[in-house]
Length: 467
Image (cartoon, rainbow, N blue to C red; front, side):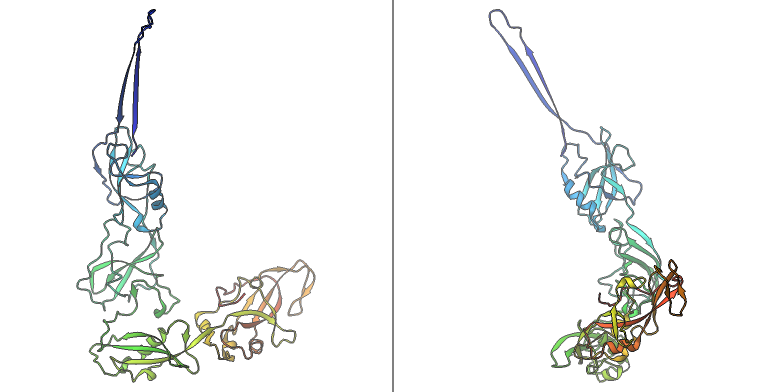
């Protein structure tokens, strides 16, 4: 609590007489002086979202008024000011001004944990001290795909009237009457200012009264398959029913070499009316895809542990167990080389700085080909296809002396040139004879000197490479 004190000491002294008589009279008075607060005024603007600056504590009433108690100390408020959680954003909804001209706002955190008055300066209607206005969301780009979304799990990722903790009045949307098979459309997108998390505003296409905001993960990515999209509370497939013996099959993963159990996953069909002991039938393709997608981390399929197919899983029955054999998977990385002197195998190792934009990218499909049983030799086809048909260039270079390019043209000192690197399939295969999965592979690129300026941009990025 902040308070001011006034002390007055009055001293009266009698004149000392010649007879040595003296008298001193002292009177002391002490009183505390508090500010008084004016009437409470509710804010007309019902969306005064604010953040604290961290310079002022929060009190149960204006801080200089008698009886004010600390709700949140300056230390606590400083932590709230630095917080990256939307729940620590405040909502200002009322104000009082003291007889000394100090303006206080009544504020509350979005999670209702802290509520009280904070000093905001000397001018009503402005924030010049303990708080500042805040935008709790920022508009984001609406995804390219706006239709065909489903709620992944309404019990965990429901809809809100505003992204959670961005509006004090935000509440869950009733999903009464909505079916888990109802598709939703997206019409808006926004990110939460504090966390940067993405939300989509969606509407039930079968009941437009059901709409709201839902966490959208990374959001729709045009270059990613539906199965690999990270959509938060949304999905591109209808949510399955709760697993029962009538509609589910347990997928049991075992290590191929010794049949040790590695765990299970439960597949639930979206086909209506299935019964226990009924064969998977026409839904076998979906079961095979599910079994392949949910393999335990560090395991996969090779020449002995075959990936499940619709045909291989077709004997499975609802209420039963499908055993899927997998193999321990080792993942190779890739290093980059020029050919050896004889032009057949690997020669000099390249550095990332030798190639414009860094080492070449391996897309997700190619990176998957680098995974296999640690005891299996990497097939020639994997090596042949790694960067087949790819060419990459160096950064722009300037000749320090006369040199000749690949066509025989002279590059005079001071003229521009660059190096073109072409993937050498044969040299790569030769350089990796007998190499097994888990070992770093040598990708061989043949360099050629080219006179002139670099005019292309490499398709480079975060490949699965080794320095």
